[in-house]
Length: 256
Image 1 (cartoon, rainbow, N blue to C red):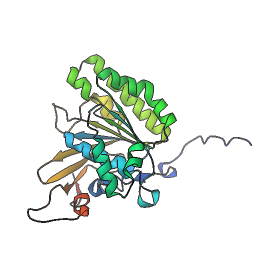
Image 2: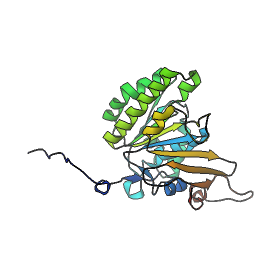
Image 3: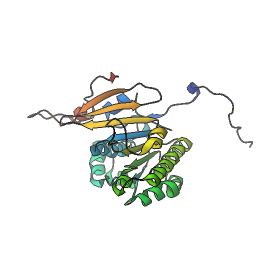
């Protein structure tokens, strides 16, 4: 049987299908026009608490495609040391998923120094994706260990290499990719990690918390303008609210 020839020449953007998946966070999905998008690198930056959302997303994507999930495993390279297995089991109950099955479908490689982060991304990530049919890739705290060890020129160059590698793999394998970083000390509106990390991520989401709510700011997107929304984090005193209160509760999108 002859091979199907590759499509060449000029193509418009509307010829390509945008595949989206629900994050499990109503406010975030609204901000992103329906959810996380395949083939794009989503850079989340802000307070460390943003990784609560990463836990939820890793479980939510295991739900069926009919319910807005992917029925897919997740690969996590954890440089921020934030992954808590008990959170996955708690979230599995919320989505009526078997906790053991959920844990079996989350593959975690933890880095303890910057050299391990670099090796995992540059030398092992391809192999992980070959072995595991995961559509979701997470790299938590990509520049974190470099910052803790004292970020120098060589470190910035390695972060740049990793950012380019992740971007290439995301496009090639059409994955839903999430990377996290802390906020730059020079500017609260920018992520740490240098220009390449920021430049290779097509979607930037700044997250900030107060006592009562979490604010999501869409700082960069290939389709949408800068805008923000938020969701409630705590229930009013003396009241009991359903789970939907915490997953929804977003205010109207505000565009800047």
